[in-house]
Image (tube, rainbow, N blue to C red; front, side, top):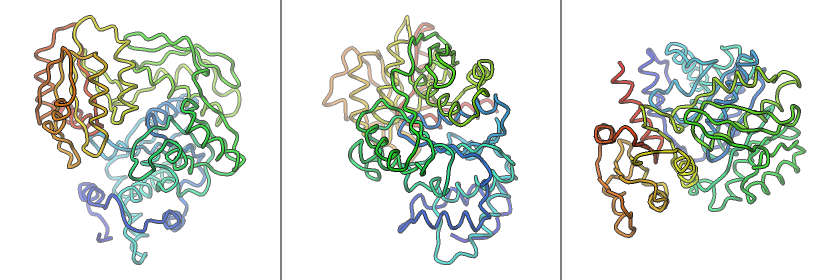
Length: 437
């Protein structure tokens, strides 16, 4: 890739989009060295680093809401984006503006032009851009989400962090991270730093065992969040109420404007993390509820139209979490499903899990524009070996066309669920925003 100054925002986005997703011989030490060459941007910020299989983005977004409610200036780096690359770089409640992204990238390219025999990958470039943006934003707290794994993710190039958060760990990206929960947990726990606290989901014993061993070897204070940490969960149509047993503040009755039951665990992790990072007494009842009331995260059981719910479930654990919420939705009519999945995911198991639930009266299977997509026809092949009792199945290659048809056919009391990939969520969101414009 040519390392030259970009002249426009559009050119900058094209440059980033063309960067290789992976590069051979990647060394995270090189990423740290480039960060130092940039002047160690963001070094003065308190850093919360979040890794895990599912729930990372939700935990980051909830933490941002809580820190903003306290009055902190917060920046956040997440992945992937749904429709606009600027979604990845947030300060307060605002995406990075176009000219700021251009300026930050040009600063990065200025330093990279002095490097020999080095081609940064997509994730590295975005990490460098974010850190420069963080410095220019004069933020107090930085929330960093890992892209994949943890130990070798570019976000782990920072030599120190103030807090690590590990969400629930499951089987995903096995080609890169390992074939077992323990191996994957070891990669995720690579974000821990000596003497720094770690908040983690304590709901998968095999993962917890690895995290605890890593934490104790580094002298990290441990703050596990288990199913004993929250109780009395009551799901409404637009919100979920539950009791959280906190370290400093006792048991708190919380209300969160979400409909996905899996968010109870994610919110519990975020509140625990905020409690650990902030000075005692800052997270008052008023501040806590104010922050939670402002918590939103796109494509996580998001009601995008009346009775239409978009969820980014893209692995088997995500599908199971989705079904837990669907079972409790109180639907008076039929449930319909639009599913699109990537070919390099365990889509046969995901489809079989959806079918075996017996929750859906009709299903449309769709391909996606992404090169990694399984086609609608490939997805339908799974049905040849599996019975979908009482379920009508259709195949399409256009998710937006399929959703429009489903909405036209659905009765007012029916519910439509869209799930299987964040790429599917992104395509639906892109059409929605195009129509709004």
